[in-house]
Image (cartoon, rainbow, N blue to C red; front, side, top):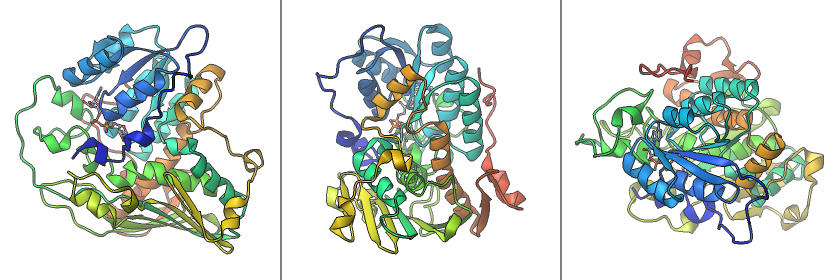
Length: 425
Ligand SMILES: NC(=O)c1ccc[n+]([C@@H]2O[C@H](COP(=O)([O-])OP(=O)(O)OC[C@H]3O[C@@H](n4cnc5c(N)ncnc54)[C@H](O)[C@@H]3O)[C@@H](O)[C@H]2O)c1
């Protein structure tokens, strides 16, 4: 699959680096990039508006070398622990590793006193999110989650209209996510030169090298990710929580609509999940049909008009649909309203990376801080657990536990492969 056909829509996610956006006066923050794939390289370009990328790290030495070249011959590493040990005057880490590495790298960077721009989905499990939130607080660090729809004016407009009651009593929210890949079985081959496959796998179970597990397609394997439910859910379910102003659902029920191919990708490809929230609000999170094309034709870019993923809010006085580059409502006058962000308690950011660097300077919480990123991906993880168990679950968002359900609570964390533990320094 081509990177361009994934959730990464390069033109959207990589704002043009305008020449009229010079670095700040005074010393520029020193930045390290950990994870030099498509997103990491884009994030580093984006961050270079505000600081200097002095070091790069990837478990694939070829990728580290390429990123170093792109960033003015930055120093190269293949082990992030060595980077953090050596680069003492760093202030910022950009973490664009695959999802199963986010928390370990984030914890190590935070303990080393760095501020972090971490790619979404913020965690692999709900337990990881609790650990991360505690560490950010204890070490007084700034962490921005890369769910950049929070810094987009159309998503903010939708959030403000919903929060201000413009749709009347909200009863249903639907987040439609692209369907995932359903393919396999795959063959193992020799490990490519330069790649430390054991380190790439990290805390995940060890397997023979299969190209479809590594680089980009890792998101379709439960060992490393949660499928499009977490990959895209970390964007659209994040908008749901922002607009409804709640920390999580109280019930979750879901079904897989397609079984995985034996020996192939393991994450749910097509699914429908129903969440219940306080006040009787129903939230349906489902894979879209248009994106079956996305899954079935990985060699072809998806035509823009077929990407019908997004979030629909329905209330007693009308509905609103928002996605990247588009907002629609049942009545045009709904969109004419301009609720005040201050009155609705909504932070305003029009540039996600700029918001992060502002907060690095001011020590304020960024628009998608650790708690926010953790809560948004928790919605996705809860959906994944409900799909796995195949029954209705009851969740207590304040305790962050399933109620009277010992079996479900075992799914809040995962076993880590030795020697990896969260006590990483
Ligand atoms: N915000 C967005 O819109 C957006 C879009 C695309 C991807 N992403 C996120 O960015 C992350 C990376 O995605 P990608 O598509 O660039 O994947 P990728 O596979 O192309 O890149 C990940 C890189 O990390 C490296 N890596 C793995 N383990 C490492 C470790 N322990 N230390 C250092 N490097 C390590 C890999 O070798 C690879 O080069 C994912 O979490 C993904 O969800 C976010």
